[in-house]
Image 1 (tube, one colour):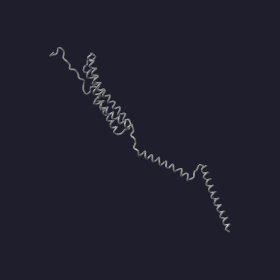
Image 2 (cartoon, one colour):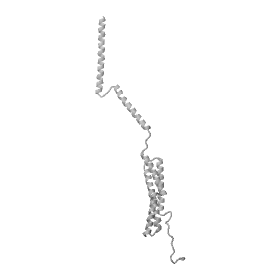
Image 3 (cartoon, one colour):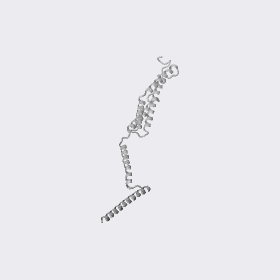
Image 4 (cartoon, helix red, strand yellow):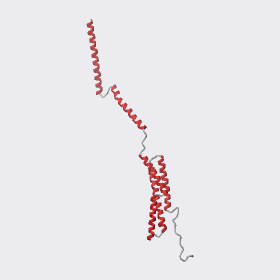
Length: 206
């Protein structure tokens, strides 16, 4: 009886091992078939998705860090600010006068004196006084025009508020400078001095 029970248990054990081996073989076959069809088991899919999720989190973190970082000031803002200040300075110089205008006016005065001494000019006031005055006015007008041009270039593109304010100030000074220079050049504010007429030989008191 004991020998028979032992043989039956041995047969049952062999049968269980055969079933286990058959199940393992079927599982391996299923995995190979899924790989040939281009499909992966659910566990492998979960493992494959894990790195992508981590990468996505890293990208989101980098984007958030870039958004929190303060924007760098563009070089264009610095250039536009300098241009606006230069325009305002040119406009102010057109009203107060410049070193170039003074030097050119003195040169014109010297040329007028040379012309009078050599007999090439007869109008003493126009040659010695009028020509230098008009030269000074012309130089101031050129500086006023430059102020308007530079300020106009600065206002071509959107700029910070303070830059636009300074540029508009340069334009205003330039316009006033052109008006003053034109008045000086065309003798609108004051007429050219004239020599008093002297009496002839037959006038009383001669």
